[in-house]
Figure (cartoon, rainbow, N blue to C red):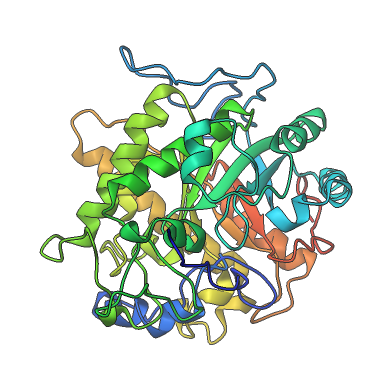
Length: 409
């Protein structure tokens, strides 16, 4: 019997808000700092727009194995511009709060939600229909997924289901054989006390594909993967990997995961997107975490670099406080990402379908007070760089400062 218990949940974002983009030192020589102190701050605060379509921007490959779940009938088409807002599993656990929130953001012009499929502990926030998934996954059952998706679709929201892959305390506790360890055999914890999974464990890859197929079968319109990287903040030198061979580079492992998700989901018509650190557009190395921007562009429908201006170090683009210059930071980050895509197209004899950029933007106070004007400056930068939309992150789901998302200020 497994006696390990998940650690006490820790908020996934910095105080005011969310998902962490990196506060990285400035160049390739700083890769170790990026993977160290800078990533500690950034613990995960977390081309032309596609035409409306009820299917993935990349249709199922001829001869591919069909998805092994029945497709729901209420799937919504992809908006020409996705204007998404992040919603936690905790918020969604109260149906009343959830419906009030989506009504309020709809009034501001939002047309998509990014819903957490996992609780802060890593347990699934919904009860799977799949008996196999129920048997292998820790389940918390905070909400009725079918009810949430239906309520969002009724109001015209495109539903993106998000969940972390390798930062997963609950699955690590239930399946310690796939988790990162210390030399004494105990599970390794990051600086926030959370367990991580080995990125080279293919059982973990399959588990996350199973979650994606289950969620898609329940009506969500797109699957978004987060924490698709090696562990960073914490005493990483103490990590013992049960599967990863340190003789291989980290890029090959994470790139292998990307290809696996592409083959098992995207090629079967299930739209998929990836969250990556903002600095992946700046430095074409794996940053010591395995993420390489070109690999992401090659295997997903959408890539969402976390370009929160507050998470760029002083001196970026010559600014003492990058958070006070949201337009410039977002514009330049996406410009660099576009240059990566342009190089890929130029070098390939027949370029494969490539992900469009759809960044995570800052909707929380850090480094500066993010007024509606500050938030809109980021949106304008994304539009000026031809992004297919944008996603707004606030860990507390406080979106009172949102501007009108459909018009200029």
